[in-house]
Image (cartoon, rainbow, N blue to C red; front, side):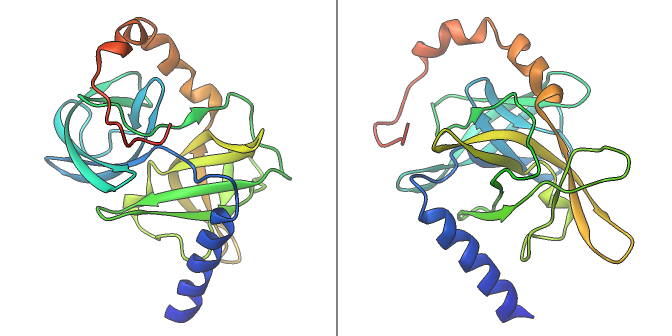
Amino acid sequence: MLRSRLAATVLAVATLAACSSYPQGPVRVHTRNGAEQGVNTEYGILTLGRTADAGPCEVTVFYGDGPSVEPGRIERIDDRICRVEIDLHAPRSQMSFAYPLPDDDLAVAFSTDEDTEYYRTRLARTADGVLAIERPGGFPNRATAVGAPVYRREDERWRLVGIVTGMVTLQGGNQILTLYGPRDLIGLTLATRDRRRNDKTVPMRDDIVR
């Protein structure tokens, strides 16, 4: 079982490496109550606020030379999404506001404190129309996967199309990952309209991949 999971992970990462670039922006957020997945976008770092939805935190960000822990502060945007502010620019995801289709090339990311792994997947069919993806082999089967970013390959680059909200076991044992999709994330763009005017005042590391 361990070998099969390792092989699935290696295959997924190798396949993504063959593309022109990795998805940018996955982070890991540490709060007073634990850690959760997050993703940096042009509108800020997004989390679901499952461990904390306000106050100070630390964010493990992945620069070109490896992980770096940055101090941050969480604020709730709406009843779905929280935003985290840090003092430096960090690698970030471009967002797509078009919903994924069954034939789309998708990937879901999972970050630890050391690195980020990427897993290829595809849209899942659900009877009630809930947006979901198939759980890839080797993807962590635990609550800390909630908040993981989901990407679609479009225009020769990876763009963020969703955030994992939970894991569901279907009849027959197959598992899917439910998502917040583009419609759920639109409030973030409205809440950060004024923030982007001050974007140029934020320090930037020279080694960040843009």
